[in-house]
Length: 104
Image (cartoon, rainbow, N blue to C red; front, side, top):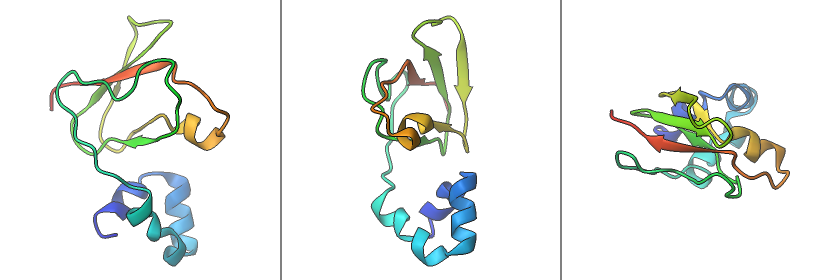
């Protein structure tokens, strides 16, 4: 909880829920968070893959490119999230982009 809650609280809705009832939100740290380390140029997921996870960037940065406009690259830095809409909407959405790691 001590490590995970600051990461989860970067999300406004989770921060608000923790203010209302911390005891109900704290178990998310143990059950919903998993640390993932990636190497330079590794992709977290491919365009077209099922979107069922949200990624919180803690260190380093990602470059996210959309499949339809691969020349437009968005930088994702610490305290930002990737794939959030696919998780919350739960519509069986597929990813339309590909995030890859960049230098730290």
